[in-house]
Length: 244
Image (tube, rainbow, N blue to C red; front, side):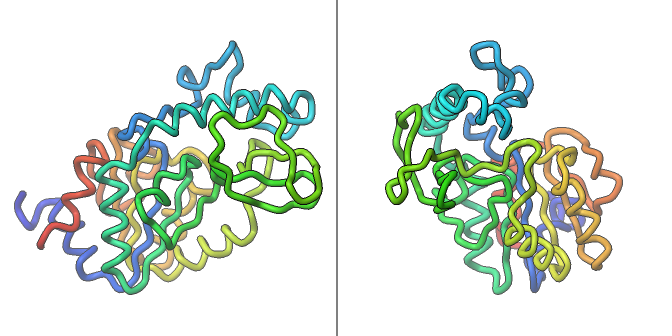
């Protein structure tokens, strides 16, 4: 593709960038075969994801919610990071100032090797105690329907930000700093519909950053960003750090 093309421009911007922030959504994991768990993909035993991923649902029937999360774990455990995940790791390793923000809870970025990241919606492979609040890694598949804390014996919950809950302050603070001082923001595989992530492009643009998105289809952010590249993340992202 010619250097003056949109792809060439994004490649050059990344090559010249002093500070890079990357935002990813479900589209990057879809290329690894991870379902979205929302809409038709989210239907499980006649329950919608939006009805189960809430504090109220967990309060009413924690066993049901844990059975659903165990089903999700079993599906995700069979998936592997794809070339887009791996390329982001390579971008992190060659960049002096880099931060990854992901809306995904599947843990594939960490599995690929990403270290500088905020998992703003949590991680399905972590559990949090409803009593003492301790957060721990847990890779059990299957996981007990009602797992308990090793320290205090209280019920554990998935370390996930559910519908109706606020994002963790530490993550929001780190994201704010990364977005407000980066000179390049790369948005990959996110619809731009779920807040606060839907507002991240605006924050970066207001701070003067170059913003590019990669998505299968146009999004609500497409008119705001500098360049939109349409296609699968696993196909386009690896092209962005080839020799310019």
